[in-house]
Image (tube, rainbow, N blue to C red; front, side, top):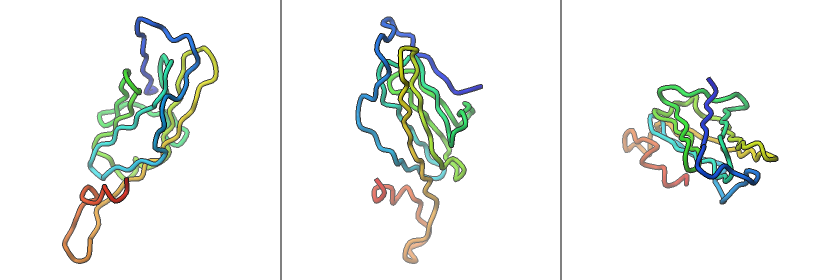
Length: 127
């Protein structure tokens, strides 16, 4: 099943989908952590998500929120989750913006002999 969610609010969108704010094209997540990527568009009835050009399917670790920014949520992030995620806003009224986000997965590393530290402790460096 393609990860597609509808937003059938009381006011069905009449304009074309549009990007409603700046967004980060590069996002970072820690191994075993959680990442939430928003698709910042207005006037969308639903959003389709893709990873490396292939439709994203929902699973126990992947969810799509149908309200707000149609967030893609990945729990228990794994190295293989890294890649280019795209959201496509759809409402049938015109061109549909595609937004791309490159997810970098940060693994565990050793820092200056201080013992094993997780990327979570260093996440502020990469934001």
